[in-house]
Image 1 (cartoon, rainbow, N blue to C red):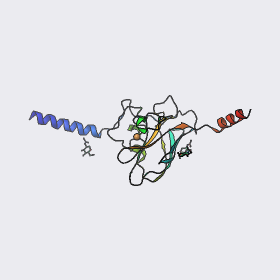
Image 2 (image 1 turned 90 degrees about the vertical axis):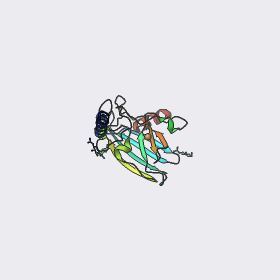
Image 3 (image 1 turned 90 degrees about the horizontal axis):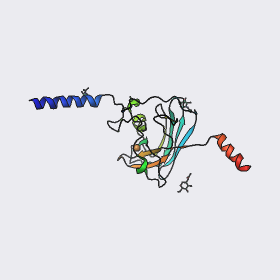
Image 4 (image 1 turned 120 degrees about the vertical axis):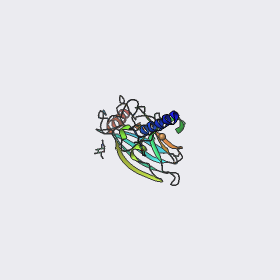
Length: 194
Ligand SMILES: *[C@@H]1O[C@H](CO)[C@@H](O)[C@H](O)[C@H]1NC(C)=O
Ligand SMILES: *[C@@H]1O[C@H](CO)[C@@H](O)[C@H](O)[C@H]1NC(C)=O
Ligand SMILES: *[C@@H]1O[C@H](CO)[C@@H](O)[C@H](O)[C@H]1NC(C)=O
Ligand SMILES: [Cu+2]
C-alpha cells in the first residue's frame, strides 16, 4: 500500500517534471544585445556531398542565420542542424565537433520546445527553428540567443555547424569562420602591392 502510494507520487512528480519549463543550470538563455560589430559576417562553407553555406550575421539582437545548402538526400531527412561546441578538425571528422553548443548547461533532454526558445540549447537551431528536408534548403531566421561577442555565453564563432539525417548521423559539418570585411581585404591588397 505504502509502496504503491510512493510509486504513485513518484509518477506524479515525474509527470510534473516532464511538463515543467526546462532551463539550463545557468537559467534561461539571455538575449544578446552586445555584438561588437553589427553586420559582421561569419560563414560555414560545405564542400562535400552537401554543398553550400550557412551564414551568420551579427544583429542588434542575436544572430541572423541563412542556410543555403544542397545535396541533402531527399530520402534521409528530415534533417537537424546545430551549432556544436567545437570546430571541425583538419581531417573533417564531424564526430569530433563535440555536442550541441549548450552554454546554459541544459542538456539534450527533454527536447527543445520551440515556443520557449530561451529554454533550448543555444546550438539547437533545428529545435528552435524547425527541421529541414532535402535535397536543397534555403532558410533564414534570427536567433536572439546566439552571440558574436566572444565574452558572451552562446558565442558561435569558430564552432562547427553540423547536419544530422533522420537516424541522427552527422552527415556534414563545417566551421563558422569570420569573413574578412571589405576594408580588411582592401588593406591586405594594398599592403601586398606596396
Ligand atoms: C503533462 O503533459 C501530458 C501530455 O502532454 C499530460 O497528459 C499530463 O497530464 C501533464 N501532466 C501535468 C502534471 O501537467
Ligand atoms: C537581421 O534580420 C532582420 C529581420 O529580417 C533584419 O531586419 C535585420 O536588418 C538583419 N540584420 C542584419 C545585420 O543583417
Ligand atoms: C570543393 O571541392 C572540390 C573537389 O574536392 C574542389 O575541386 C573545389 O576547389 C572545392 N571548392 C571550394 C570552394 O573549396
Ligand atoms: Cu548536432
